[in-house]
Length: 218
Image (tube, rainbow, N blue to C red; front, side):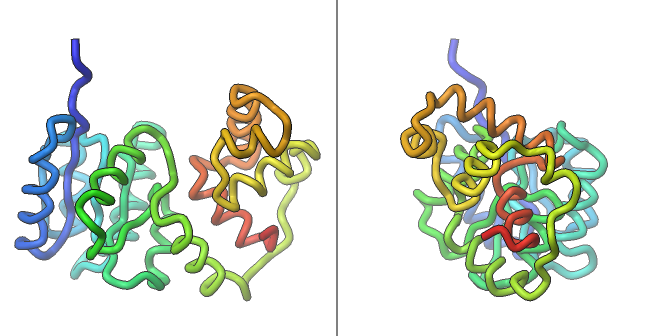
C-alpha cells in the first residue's frame, strides 16, 4: 500500500503563477493540488474545504495579505493547521519575517528552481524546517537585530545541554550534525528538541530561529 500523496493548496493573486505551480506540482506522483485561491480572505475557507497538508502562500496580496492569512489559519487550526510555505519575490522582505512569526514553516523565492520548490514542499510536509534557511537568517539579522530583548522565564527552564542544542539547531544544524557535535544519538537529540520547543512554546525550528534572533541569542 503506497502513501497518500501530499495535498497542496495555493494562495496567490496571480492566476498565471498559480497555474504554473499547479503544473509543476501536479507532475509529481507523490504530490497533488487540491485547491487554489487568489486572496488571503479565501485562505481560511479553502483550508476548511480541501484540508491541504501544505499551503503555498504569497506574502503580498491585495485585501488580506499572506501574513494575516497565515496568522488566521494557525490561530483557527492550531496544531492541525497545514504547513504554510510563504512565497515572496524579494529575499529580504520584512513581511516574510512577520509571516514566520505568525506560524509559517519557511519561505521560498518565487523564482526558485522547480526541483527546489518540490523538495521544499516534501520537506515541510515531513515536518522539516530547512527551507531557505540562510535567507531566513539574513532576514532576521536585518529586520530584528535592533529589537533584541532578553529572553523571558521560559528560557530559564532549559538545561545547559538544551541551550547548546537549541543554538546549534537555530544555526541550521541537522539532528545528525548536532548528534555528532554533542556526542549524542540522533534519538536523544530529537528528544531534546521536542523538550526545547515545548518549554519555549514554539511550533518548529523556524520559530526557534525567530526566538533566538529576537532575544539576541545568535
